[in-house]
Structures are given as structure tokens and as C-alpha cells.
Amino acid sequence: MAEPDQPSIARMIDFWLGGEHHFPVDVAAARAFEQSYGPCAEVFRSLRDFLGRAVRSIAEAGVESFLVFGAGVPTRGNVHEAAPEATVLYTDVDPVTIRLGQRILTGSDRAGYGYGDATDIGTVDPAQLHRFVPGWGRRPTGVVFLGLAAFLNDETLSRTLDELYEAAAPGSFLVIDFPGEELAGHPEALAVMGQAFRMRPPSACAPLLGRWVPTEDGIVPVARWRRDGESAPVPEAFHGGVATRPAA
Image (cartoon, rainbow, N blue to C red; front, side, top):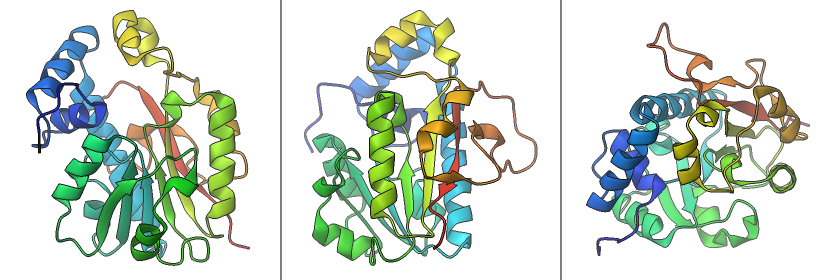
């Protein structure tokens, strides 16, 4: 695989998680970002821990397949590792990340990786959807939507979540996060994220879910969501939770 000349936030996160699937350009970008906002590793490890707890809770509810948008690098506790008995389709829009994910998952019969734009579910390959998310639209599925609300305005986000609600079967679950206002105090880091980056106060998050119904845990700082005992303090950079499409 040719070494890219542009950094990727997915591979930067892999670096912060202590993974092995990143390049020098990603490390350089991650180190530069840390000059503006230091606790990146702690924040993203907390977010990945939240993903694991959320996915395990969904699997324990009887869901056997997951559709993941904006998947990034499929390792370091990602969905198929958190729920090893489930089948998983990872999707992304970045071709380098997709090729990397496909290479990592070579030989797996339970997890695949392909192109998929969360704002247009029709872009997901039907053959992959049939293979890794059998019964999509007819059987409950876990939909993972992490790292995406940050780059969608309210109108697009609400429309996208409503379309996913319509497409998913009753009894399905949605895992979602929202950047809080942590970076507001770090203007250099905020500038790096670009003009599309959306910070939202916690009170603005749940209304954007539309017909998706949050579990009783609510939308909370991710480190607090069904936390396993005490944990080291982490900046409240992300809020998140799990929501359901209630069974009919």
C-alpha cells in the first residue's frame, strides 16, 4: 500500500489509540494537533471505550449485525472486536482508509469494509450489505454513527438520522456522539478542524435524534455512559449515547 502524503483523522486516531496502522504523515499531524490541544490520546481512548460498552450492550440485547459509518481503522477495540460473534460492515468515504480496512480484514468471514456515505445510504454496496448485515431493514441492526455529527449541520444531520431510522428495522439501535464545546477554548485546534466542524451544547443533542429514542442513560459525556467503575478524569470533549427504533 503506497504511503499517503496527506494525514487522515482516522489514522491519527489509530496513533492516539496506540495502534499500528498509521503513517509518518499522520504522526506528524497528530503531534502538531497536540500542540494546540494536548489530551487527544485520553479523549479518543475514552471515546473508543464508550464504543465498546455501547456495542456490547447492543449485542447483549440480541442484535447480531452492525453497520458502521465513518468507520476509520477497524482495530483497537472497534466493533468486530467488541462483539466478536456479530457480523459487521464497516464503511467510509476515504479511499485510503477503505483500502487499509480491507487489508486488515482480509480473510475475515464476519467483517467487511466498503464505501458508504452516511448521508446517502444508497451508496452502500448491496452485496456487502446482504453479506455482513443480513436482514437489513427486516431484522434489528446496530448502526454506529461516530465522528460524523461533528461535520454535519443540523438540517443534514436530522435528515440523515431520519433516513437511517426509516431504513433500519424496528428494534434497531443507533450509537452516536456529538462534540461538546471543549475546543472553544482552544482556537488553534478548532481552526485545524475546519469550518465544517460543529460543536454543540449537550442540550442541543437529543432533539437532533428525531424519532430515535435515547435509552434511559440519555446523551451524556461518553466517559460516563454505563461506566465500568471509576475511571481517570477525561475532558468532556464528546457527548454520546445509544438510541433505539422502538420495536413495533
